Length: 304
Image 1: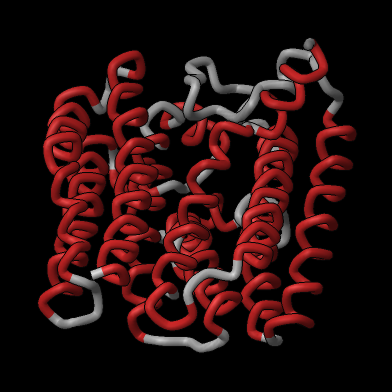
Image 2: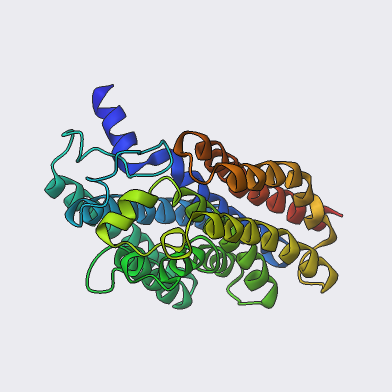
């Protein structure tokens, strides 16, 4: 049980629900074209999970190397890393080694899917791994460079890359519809990383990590978080009006009360780590629940 707890903590397994949800949305969007290829979907889910385990552990390693997690005195269940290095549970070298193993597993699955379904999968996969690694790793260190590059990497890694990749594995075509719904998921992922930056604000400033909240400041950052969340819903409405999303996609409007409460809390509690955690939890809910509602929307649209 101790080993299992260590694995779950080191890999941040509960947070794999986010990227897996993005994969499910991509597959659901392809339902009207080809139905569902279950075997390929399973492989895609395993592949994206492996890549994100590699990403999580890689980020933990480099956030230890550059001290952002080491100096963080206010870690939360949603930010500050897994803390397995800081708490002496695993040595940093082991975290890096297992990160490489996870990336290799994900890459192997990606190569198989590229051979079976087309080379587009390979290029999307390579882009995803590269963006994930260089978010924290040299020479790019996108989170440290700032200028929105870290948030852009999250947007791509939560939206266009997994959603379009999953869609292509199923349908073997690229469409504007897939791109549009991938933007919705990308915005949700960006909102999640954005809200988690508030708890890490002090530590990130100390080590020169130029996140959006550090660059903008906490109050303007809270406004920016709210804008990203609102943009997600506007994107859904515009997609329905423009014929790029099915009418049933308006199901996501059911989560507006959660979004409202989360934005309101962020605006009031942006400087209070113990309270901003509630907004982090709500944003995770928005990411996963809205993704599942989009899957339901596509299933209903296909059935109707």
